[in-house]
Image 1 (cartoon, rainbow, N blue to C red):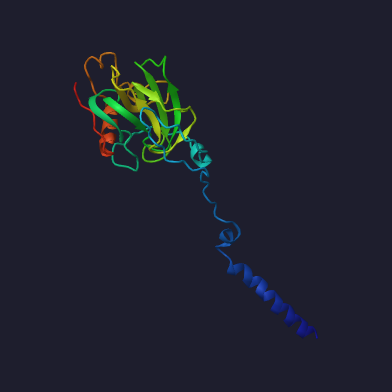
Image 2: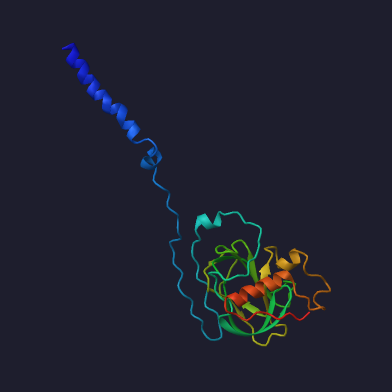
Length: 234
């Protein structure tokens, strides 16, 4: 009876020693499910472009995973990307490259990519007109700021903190505005441009029609997206 009992105990103990080794190397996978990325639940409807106005801004709740990312130093790229041409719904004539790129014309300016609006002002901007800025959240230039300035009117309902998708109307060009419009890389600091932040622009640069590296970079980006690049005049 003692021998038989010992054999039975050995038979029970054997699987208990083998079982843990069978799961060696995959215990974490067996017990912890891989986290799933959180996506924004609200969808954004395509905006219509009525004559003489700008469609209201469609709002959505941005993904916390995107908004929580720390801002990195902006290093604008000028090659092709998944961004869209912000001038696709406008008729413009390219002018000089300076801090950004100057244009004359009319129509709608849209967001290049998914972005958060960081500045909206129509007076007291230090520019001859409005200043609108947004920070790109996705793509090769994520973390960089884009500004639309001078002869533009913000889209109806556009507010700081709004998250907009690529192609969303941001502003309407005021036809016949004396100085036209200027678009380019922003600094994310009030109404400063990226060129000014990097000291590429001085008091003499305007009179000399001097193009900045930041302006050339943005012009090249517009060209890669199918829009007209600016002109080097200085």
